[in-house]
Image (cartoon, rainbow, N blue to C red; front, side):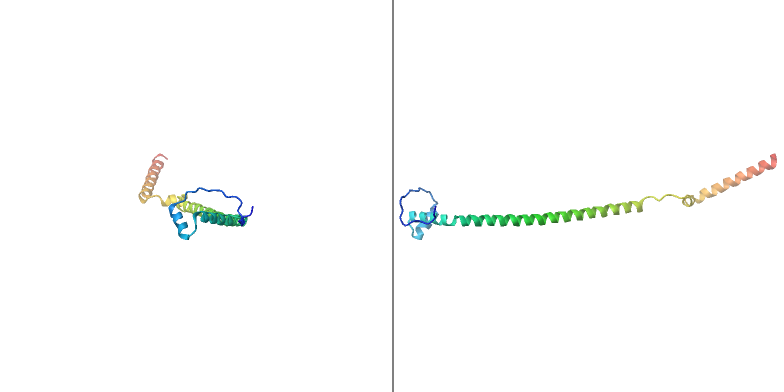
Amino acid sequence: MSTEMSTVIDEKKRINAEIPMNLYQKIEATGYKTTEAIVKGFEKLLEEDGDSNFDEQIKQMENKILAANSRTEAKVRQISELSSWIEEKDRLISSLDARIRKLTAPKQKTWPHYIAGISTFQIWSIGFSFLLGMLFMSAYFYYYI
């Protein structure tokens, strides 16, 4: 069906339409009769709503979809970069945590540490006990041997 109007109109149909008052006043202000304005409006609508406009709309939608896909791919790349960055930071945190635990752990006490940990009073008391023991042993050996 052609969108062009033929010069000979074979048949006419009546259309009853309720339109807002402000639109009706605009139609009257242009100088068109209402029937003529409605016919011109439908002709304009059919001209704009042709197949070429439909193809353009499809192309526009395809372009929008492609743009959305590229934005989505960019966001996916950003997310993967951020997740790798987070993994790296988690690894560094666990490494630092292990190092801190190692540095703050109580040291294993060795023999010199035990000796250094004995107080002066304990050293004197051990020495005095040893001397008393020697004294009693020497007295024992002197009198009984």
